[in-house]
Structures are given as C-alpha cells and as structure tokens.
Amino acid sequence: MRRRSLRVQRESTLTNSPLPRRGEIWTATLGNPPIRHWVLIVPLSSSGPEGPTVIQLPPGETGLPGPSFVKGHFIQVLAKGGLLTQERRILSGTRMREVVLAIRRSFDPDAPWPGK
Image (tube, rainbow, N blue to C red; front, side, top):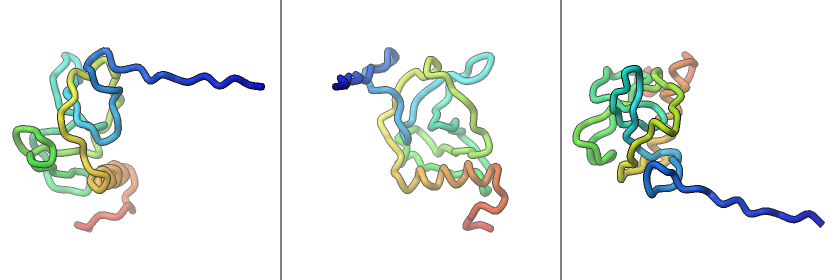
C-alpha cells in the first residue's frame, strides 16, 4: 500500500499572503537598475496607446491611484524574489480572459480583436 503525503503550501516569505495567484496585482522590482512597478503577470504601465495588445484598466478595478495599461506584447519572466507586496484587488475572470487574448494577439495576427 502506497502512503500519500500531504503537501503543505508554504507562505511567501515576502508577505503574509500565499504565493502569487493568477489575476493578482503585486508591486515588484523590474529591470536593471531595478525600478518599482505594479505587475499582473505582465507589467502595468501608467500610459499606453490603444491597440490589439493593450488593455486599459481603470483605477476602480485595480485599486491603484490612476489608470493602468496591460501590454500583452511586453511580457517577461519575473523572479518571485522581485515581488514586494500584494495589492488588494484581483482582476475578474472576464478581465483575465481579455488579458490572455491581448497576449495571444502579440504573437498571433489572426487572434480576434474587437477593433479589427
């Protein structure tokens, strides 16, 4: 008989929150030299042009001080050690599907886009 072991999910040493989950917004350091950004799998920017790979998020949705822009064409790997603090808001499943489509449009010109 095989014995099953239970895995205990460790909490992040950075905050009291569990490890980052899809849809969460965090503060992180990116780049060299490191610069503080808000991130959601992809970095959030404070500006951005309208287009098939850019989604504007209003402050009421993110809890951040101003409008933010998800740039699906600007994705990168982020070490968990670069995460600083978790913000209070989590994006909805509907909004996350929009983010996934924006990322897809960055490498698939045939991906659907309402502005097309």
